[in-house]
Length: 110
Image 1: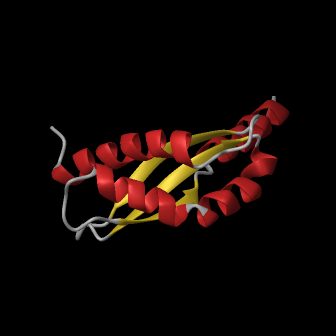
Image 2 (image 1 turned 45 degrees about the vertical axis):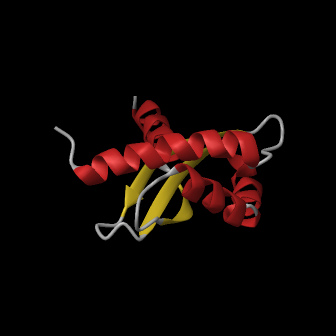
């Protein structure tokens, strides 16, 4: 059974993925994935973990999201009917990068 916060995190994740796809104007050849959302207990803040491929475009993509944050936040506020509405912050999801490093280290050990 999922807690209320888990359901809110999933709702924000799905909603943001659609908004970013429609509104953020991500350049062709860059794949951005909303991996996870971590909302504070008081529902005032939400950390949005994103993954970018190719990774060397991560800085450029986060900068673009930063420039469009007010538009993205506004669209999220329109689509979600809840109070308080969490303020979003984009954060790098390094899980895949770390997993790749570990995999390479394990291959070297063999």
